[in-house]
Image (cartoon, rainbow, N blue to C red; front, side, top):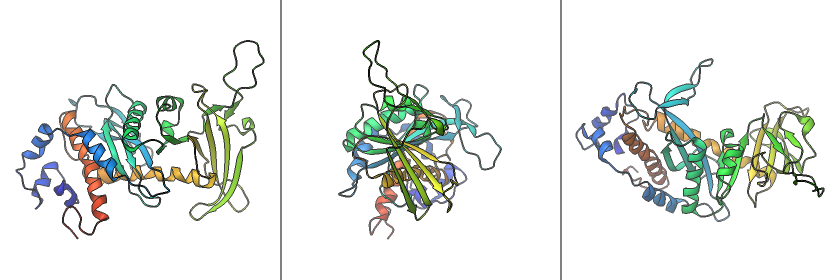
Length: 340
């Protein structure tokens, strides 16, 4: 870990042994990952002790998943096709590798720090949705009830709402613009089975929208003029008993015309802040994307060529540990590495 934190660039995993703070032989780099056993539950408890929001703040969690490309590892088990962004337009954003799911604490309202609590591989028996739901359940048991979790559009679906329905955590999720929601059912007429769904609410068809529950116009320092609209008591077709708040955020020009693609959000939970502050919670989710870029470019997460999944998981468990070490060191006069 000391060698990784003090080595800005490395062309191979073995090159870390050239660091002055590395005190072992080069062969132990791969051997320690083969023989080590990482105590994941103990680390989660240790991280949970450091989660300390302000007196009037709630714990903010951000979840997502990313791929570790393993193009030249044909014998690696559970290697699948994964989404992977490409640096130039027109190419297919697909790679071969393994996928990892992350749930992180976002400690600051302004800033790019994301402190991972769990960073685990998604096996062939799981999916990003089931893995994220299991991680949220595990973290909530450690941190206590009612944290606020933030999720991207892939998690804004009925399946993820079903998986997390019994977890004591509030959720804010982005929706794709082609989603269809349903309003509350009409009053039972007394004949036949009571209806579960009301009118359709198509996000890309304004003719299906009914009057809003709340609307606001705000001037944001970063985004300019915004129009916020909220509809209450909507649900997915597969989750008729789980009501949600639907929020539409639009950027406007001086004439009141929309200038960018709208942002659709759903909020599930209680005790939400006012509408002008609720939508800004989602902006803190992007910190986990910054963390993915940080571990790939600076912490050399994708550098070692490991032959099996076990050492890959143990190496991945060190990424949150090194991030927490940097965070704790930056808030102290003397860092854990001994640099002032």
